[in-house]
Length: 514
Figure (tube, rainbow, N blue to C red):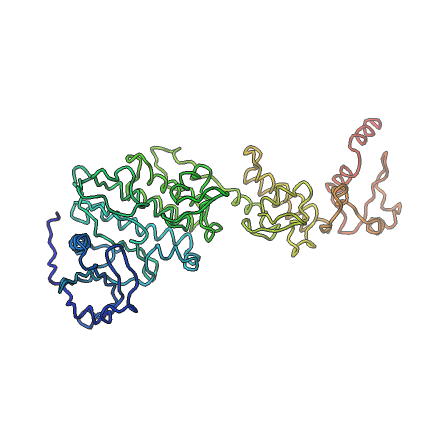
């Protein structure tokens, strides 16, 4: 028991005041109900600063409800933390036992997740912030609420996490909470195990031993609720398999990738490194090996880093200096990031996660289309807005370097310096090379047709092949010069000769001449 005692008399609210605030507990003011209570919304009088409050009315005649009321009253009156629901007062009068809290506008987390419209409005970054806020509240309890004696919540679940108008998390529901034995970090509870089945730690369930790690397990369930958008007690099927509850799905598909479990409302928002960090710490929370579960401080640190990665698109530069090679996976660069660096997105005019149909094929994402159509030519993928502008040589340089970047063989991927050189080369060709826009050749002749120069253009450039423009001859013809500023460079001439003719024959001819 903490040394400091709270004078509860100063928090007493007369039953008359509460009835006035709730219109005598009218149905219109009811906003929720639980296992042992009904929740109302009301506004107190001027004496209580006209505060909008949530009024938790314990069901009459419930022994368990009465026990939890006194336990929660003792607990919450001592808590002072921004992530704990503020305690306003209580009533114990005429067989009515009531606890009054500050009202939070956005309701409970489980209601937000149930409602698809609300769920769509909560981004991945906001979900991370909610998780961090809830973790800080639990961390405050576990660290001893400033008194040095840890508190075990014992009923961590999404319905006991409330959200204010800024989506800041507030922990509530302390009816089952207990002080922990500070030496053993756990306490024995001889009462029947309580709580919600799908959030309960299976290791300590029914053992009579209450541990801080059990709160961590329950919080891990909440983390996967946030990722998946489904509640712990709901079921769904994946790949036509039998419907299963959330944690069964997590354990079944974790190694295959939790992407199948990710809420479709946010799947296109999540930075892959942020997801990796989040899922790792969440999975540790639900470990069957209690010692492997992280502390709330560790969880907060990982969630904050996941949020930082999500917001800034880069990993934190902080690593443990004594372990310079640990957690290298955090520094993996996603293929999508490389694609962006090499103009793959800019070339196609479509986002990496969007889908497009080509011909009669099924709609596919960008990378699937690239791998499917690369050998047939990227013409089908080029953004129509720039198709008529692209120099064919510039296009060829860009598509080759971009495709090397997404190679499944890591050794084939170019360095950033190589990428920069290729992009600069493509830009130089685009700015100074001869204009030749993308066409739609048939598959057999597409490579050579890119290099076709109209006879009219050549005739004009050489003044109808006049002797004045002739500069030499060889086994296959003569080389013509012209004085126009648009004349091709020698590099361009060589490229066109080598692509249009049999290079081996050309070498034989050169050998005979020497």
